[in-house]
Every structure is written in structure tokens, then in C-alpha cells.
Image (tube, rainbow, N blue to C red; front, side, top):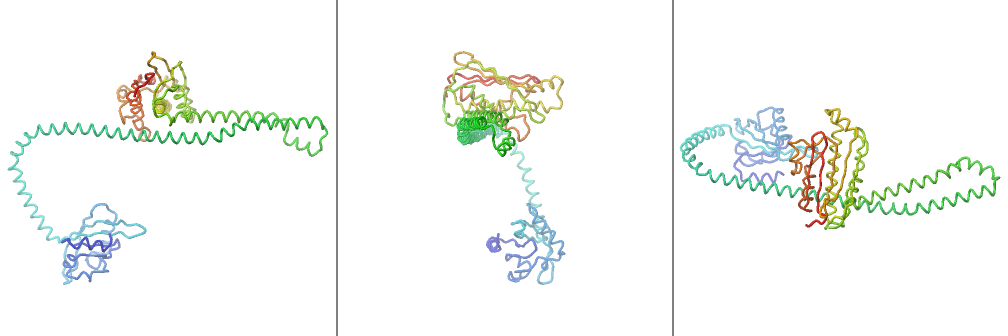
Length: 456
């Protein structure tokens, strides 16, 4: 607030108001302040607050500093020197408008109030309070009767409030799920874009490795023929052959090309899994191979399956049956596989760092496993089972695993939406079933049952 803005604001107010800087300089005042001091407002311009009060400079500075650093109004007391030589004790209320910063001083708004008048007002206020207390006592019986009459209304209001709260919770859940879906969509777009960008140069490298190997082989063959035809090579060439160790180079270069070929093929597999996981072009129902979706999720989570620091390697056991192609929403189903597999890895990692395990659990922890089994239930249904040998789920927690926002993970590690969203995808989107079976200390198993031909 500038002094000009302050004057526009304070001109219509009857209360004495001052705008001062953090150093105590008067930037602007209104007419009630001038009347209180017996001065004209023009005479107050440029003055310091210290010139108008009897308190010491240190006390005033401390009070202004308190006002500058507090977000609340700071109450104080200032004794003003009036123009006629008399003093006037005032209660002050200071509020910072612009906090202090290295670039500018703070701006403080001071409201002054004659303490004698304030005390008189306080007495009047107490009188009014006594009168109101008597009035309240007189109306007490009438209010009690009214309260009884309102009980039914209160019950209805409570019921309505409960219904509104449930609606609000549903809206909040829907909003959160939409945000989560948008995040997954963004992730899918990013993954697909990265996979596309990587695939082009890798395909170029892979396509040229064969020709590079053939050209190199032809050049080495030419060198060997030259050695046979001209056994007595110049001394300079002999030294160079010894320097580069031609025999070793011939043997090793073939291994190098084989290694590069294997590496590029591995990158192509990863790119294929990334594109399979994102499935941006398959937002509608489509027939897909369920095993490809599971494998793509495992490929993305592979870095978490490997041994690292205090976590041992997690072994994945696949027991795939011959499944028909399933009509589903591929991207959403892959999200379910990702959520359940990530939870299984979290459970095995928690077991690894748990310091209060039994000997049997320690033995199990040395061989953490995730078993994935698929089977055909009948001609209309298939099942996917994902089980781990982690700590399992407590009985009191078991019934809440699919509830929105419920999580047993530490703050910042889990949102409580993974299994809730997965349940919604399986049950509501695909008309299937998602169940959890667990015995504490013996791991957990999630079973997904979906129809071969899902109907939206």
C-alpha cells in the first residue's frame, strides 16, 4: 500500500491511523491523528514516530520490529506528546502491510485508541454483557422447548449431511482417479515417445552391424591373403602387426560384433515391451495376448527384481497356460498388472529390511519369489494369479486393501489408489473379479478373473 492509497483508505475512517516505515518514519496519517495531537496533518509529514512519543527509541524500534515480523496484529502502548505539552496514553494496534525484505522496508499500519475512552467502553461492554446474560436466562426455557421441537429437524439435517459427505467423498475419489488416469496417460505418451525415439537409431545400428561385420571380415581376409603372398613384409609393417596383435584382433573383433548384436537385440526387446505397455493406440476394447501385457510390466520393473544393496534378487516363476486372446482394454489391464507386481516387490523389500523376522522368515527372505500363473477356467473365463512369499497381510487390514486411499506404506511411498483403481478396472470396466488371499507371514496372492469377451 502506498501512502496515497492509505490516505484514500483512511480519509473516510474516524479512527486515528498512521502508516509508518519499519524505521519509524511517518509516511501518511489521517485527520483524527492530527486532531489527537493538536497539529495539522502537514506538520506531521516526514516526522519520525520517536518525535511524537515519550517512549525510548529502543522500545519503539522493538515494537515496530515485532509488527514487521508478525502475521497477527501486535498490541502495544504509546504515550503521545500533544502540541500543548500534555501527554496522551494510547493503546496501539500494529499490523504489517508489506513485510520487510532486502529490497524494501516494511510498511506498518498503526491504529491508536485513547486508553481512557477504551476503559470506559470496556465498562459499558460489561454492562451490556450482564444485560445479555439476564436476557439469555429469561429465554432459556423457551430455547429448551424450541430445541426439543428442532430435534427432528436436526436428525434430518444430519442424515442430509451424511448423504452430502458421501457424495463429496465419491466426487473426491473420482477426481483423484481422473488425476491418476491422466498421469498414466501422460506416462504412456512419454513411454511411447521414448520408445519411438530409441527405436529409430537402434534399428539403424542393428541393420548396419551385419554389413560392418562383413566388411571387417573381408578386410581381415585380405590382410591374411597379403601375409601369405608376401611373407617378407617390411620391418615397419612387422612392428605395427606386433603392436596391434593382429591374431588377437582377428579373434576378438568377431566377439565384439556378436556382443553388439546381442545388445541391440536386447534394446529392441525393451522398446517392444515399452510400446506394448503404453498401448496408446488401443484405448478401446481389443483382443490381446494377456502374457504380453504381463511380460511388458515385468520388463519395466526388471531393475527392481535384481539384487541391490540390502535387497536380494527376486525370482519370477511363470506358469503360463495356453490362453485365448482376451477382449479387454489393454492399457488399463497392463496398469493392473503393474500395480499388483509393484506391490509384491514392495512386500518382499519390506521383508528384507524387517529386523523382527523369525528364522523361517529369514530363510524365506533369502529366496524371495513372485509366482505368476495363468489358466483357463472355462470357455468364457480366464484367471491370472500373482503371488509373493513376503510378510503377508494382517487380518484387520485384509478387508480394506481395495478401499480408496487406504495404504500400509509410509507417507510419500503409497497413495492408497493402486489396488482401488485396479479393482475398478477389473470389476467395473471388464466385469471381472479381483480377490486377495493371504496368511500373515506366508505371503499374499491376488487372483484376477476376467471374461474372455469383456463388455463395457
